[in-house]
Image 1 (cartoon, rainbow over the protein chains, first blue to last red):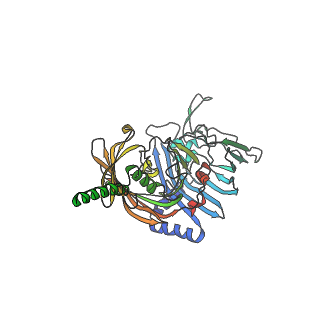
Image 2: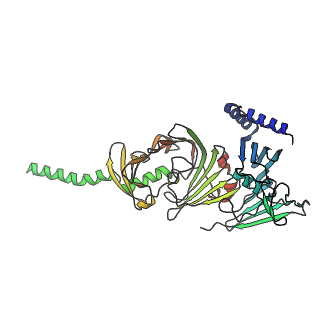
Image 3: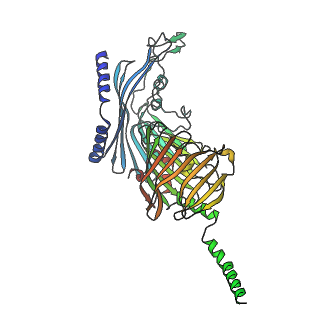
Length: 228
Length: 264
């Protein structure tokens, strides 16, 4: 990715900080009143540098310029959600459009909820590392110091939940398996057993990602009940 | 003879009249009960939009805006609370939910929408700050009336003044607190907390009340930390009572998907 393009993005990001709060608030109110769109977002600049040099990685551990946009709209009794990031990553020198959420939440029956689309799914219990949560994580983002939110990696699928006094059943079907973003050497170095040493960018883990829709699929299920 | 009889009649009158005169002033248990009901149990359920402004000792302000739903299981008894945060943006769409119990610790949940995580929170620390404000969890859900011994120290035209001492002093940071209860509405109008060194360190006071749907309601209140020099002002708006909230709203299902009563 072009260094000039990247620098250009940073300039636009900095200039956009000068949009006055009143203008932004006015635009948000306008979107809600006229289109029923609830809009929110933030801009973030994150930077980090290694205090000890890592022979395998760049000195800069993180350099993000991020613009987040969230929008929610009611469609009848259902809810349409969107959450996206425009990220200029100074370490990988890329500009990415990341879709975190694009889903529809509806309740077709009294005791049934559906969530369809791209979303973050979680049913672990406990605090940060929620051990029993087996959905995809983004370990790289977590360890380079991005916000806690980015520990979870969104997935595509349909979640159907049934509720009753006896117990609740959640089912999630993903037509294509998406694994966790693990430490591959791209940003953080790791010990490679084969090479018998710590390696990084010059020996990144390569994977054969599943790519057959509906064949490399995934089904999750949970039966739960609150017992006082 | 005449004067003795008149004295006798006077004494008899006093004898009969005095219990009636005492009955018109409620006893301490009745005051405490009525104050608890007035403050926390008005109507069967309710909704309010709350804006909390937290001012620190350098006059810098922070805002917390949320919508609170409450349902009483029984007057004076168990309750459900559902708090949906709107501002600032780092707590937006987070939900805090409480199942208040009298005989045991409350059940509390926090929902983090960015992680889609339902977190159970330990209820043991009721005396910690609610979302960084000067209000404590116990201020929001109510302190059990049997946790303290209550003593009526003064009655004037406007207030019943009660002094309250905790039955388990180790469980709280104060040694006692004094509350001024309005005689007409039974709303606690001001509470002063005394710490273990005998110093007044915290005040919670009502700045404005309104009559809403026949219930005397606090519309502006303020909690001040005298030692730290910071305070929180809470403004309650769009207050509605008896909106037929269903009990099932106060469950994990609706942590992940805010009910209709939040959006409207």
